[in-house]
Length: 440
Image (tube, rainbow, N blue to C red; front, side, top):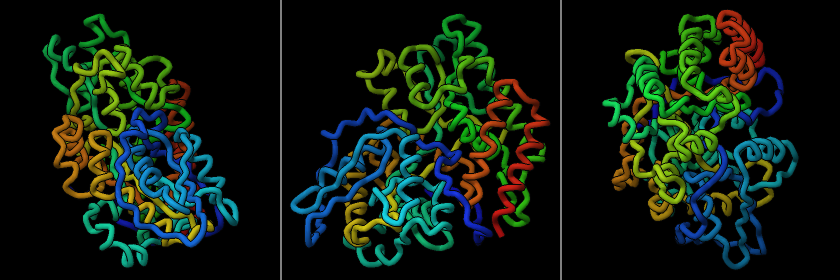
């Protein structure tokens, strides 16, 4: 398996810009159901000369917590304390901005993901890790971390985060409902509309489709997934020209609009935990969201429908091309303004991605360590293994996050019927042009 990546472009900031961390590729959101008692206890051979506290900033989700918990449980010993406070994704993004803004930050280890690595690296906010990998890589078995995931956490030839796991969109569906109606999991948006209509017409589900289209976050992830499924990036990196004036940019918005009749009218207030809740309650029969959310659906302690869910890769927007998906590689970074020794911090994060810790994360996570996911017989991991190779390539450029952030309200207006597709794409083209003016 190789993580699909778009070609990189070497760029420099034309002028200092505000740090944007609340990127359009919203990760897994908040709300873990993975208890600390399940954390792996692994060897953490880190030595410190005096009492040292390592403060970790990582949002809570069932896919991230196994790694955070392993780090805290395994490395808190003697004079070393690894501390982590529960927090949701929105809180993490706010605190990341705050901790990186000062001369000395509050946090010493940051959970990051591939979407924001280019911007943080270009701003010199993170420590490049190549020399530390050379020093400790053999001791911690880092050669077994997937090459594509390492590349996803790199920028301009340097590694800026140790990958722990990858997440991609998956589709969860009520297998019992599909069987009763003689339906198959949809592989295109056209089929998704057809099965949603059939379920809606059957009368048991007023709004059978659940998608996380939160207007302040997830909705840009959805738009980028639709655009990527049509084979188009936000920007042509060779000409530095935005692509929002293309037919595909308009089609992506129209395809999103076409799903609105099958979703709760309040869809732009729903993040991923809210979509989970719709599925828990039996209010929806189909959901598409990040794979890290799927194991919660299969837990009978969470919902009476746990045994009724099936899992599959998401559909493509058109008849062919990549799937409607977003690939997020999550990992650990060291902020450049931490006062703790980089060697200590690197060994702490390397401990959390050990083979035992990675195996303990299944099936909630899709581990970065090669071969671990293959050992799982979970239907979620099976669907994820199929989906990961068919996600649109990532856009590893520092302008991607600010363009996502600034176009987000426009996309929400289209979904809510407040502006036309034509006006929206024109505004988005201008927004992206203005953002690109900061780069050379």
